[in-house]
Image 1 (cartoon, rainbow over the protein chains, first blue to last red):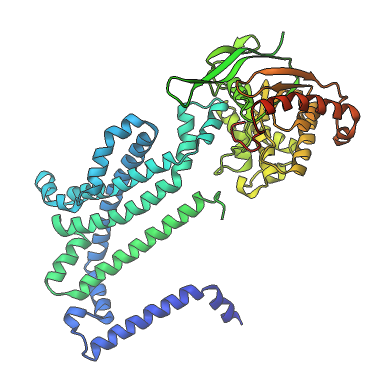
Image 2: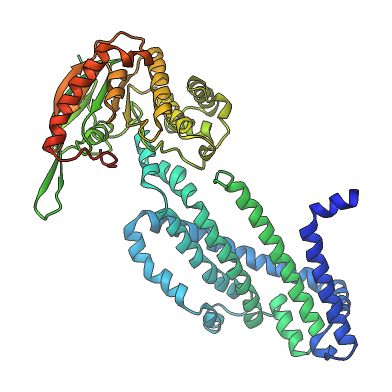
Length: 257
Length: 267
């Protein structure tokens, strides 16, 4: 009875976990039975061993610290610049026209292709990673914030004017709240691009971090260690996503469901 | 001296053809005493809402002036609070936060703001709903929030732009009654725009009848029905007589300008 209730409440989670478990068992068996090469395909047990050794030598903590540092700095800069520029472009047509070409050119350009150039200009290491992360991230925040500002209803702005609101009141009390849903959609896209930016940056122009480790160990055919990094990135990504969803749910309690 | 004076107010827009102009309001003169309840009726497109927007200073006149206490009105402000036809509540704010908006802009400290907002929410009988969001309320309740928001800033004049136009017939009557009850208590000057003749007669001390484009005030009808008024008034002979008078004035306008365009948004 108690179990049945507990099961019903967590059905989604439990069945999901079961699916993953079956996949892991299948993977392990296929490798053990010799259908797949353990060196290239790795296996759950090998990954567990690799995890233990990476944990003991401190690589996981060190890489996580580097990853989160680069992600946080790159993303935060992109958020501040993106939201400010997006609002300025949305509110003022002159700013929009002047900044538009830059935004769209960066948006359309394969940002990753700038890595070699940025390495020449900035050098090897975190600064370059952060720069590319910034470039990859801020454009989707700018574009969506601007669209959000345009979505603010003129009638709401009129309300503020009627009650004597000044332009700054209109921005703070109408434009920002009205643009929040689209702005956050842009932030979400920006976050996933920031993730990619950091990992690719570490692969190309750094000597530390998960991206670097993935490239390095793949070169040595240590696939289990590669998987350790990938799995940790998945975990970090999932946690950030859950936090983001929780923030959104709080912010948008006012929306009709 | 009148509290609110509209002097030779005209407004023209550029017309659809280049070089042409469309005259929306033509030398409108209105003079309103403190505490008066003035209603404005007219065919759709006659500029009655435009007149209200000019008093609110959301629009600038082409010529003429609006004066409040002998001073020219040049920009919007809480001394002329507007109640919108579509309620225009901020959907991301709770009911009480919506009412507090005007007080926030007047820089009233937060504790006092809350107190004031609650007072007016109680007045419109929505005290219990203060933490709801607008989408959780019915149309009538939303407009009561709109009225509380406008009253909370203690305006000199309350401007109401077809405030019950989006509500169904029964709710409309109830809201009319409630508005009268609040007005008897607060004695604010009210300018109330409607296309419903019954509503105009039932609520107003005076009905301004407007002509279709260009908008002019063609007649003022003083309504000498006793107050406080209630719904039974609508069956009395005097009431019917007023309705008849106003309808006759409007009918000519409608005939002169084609159909009575019922649901035009630009009324």
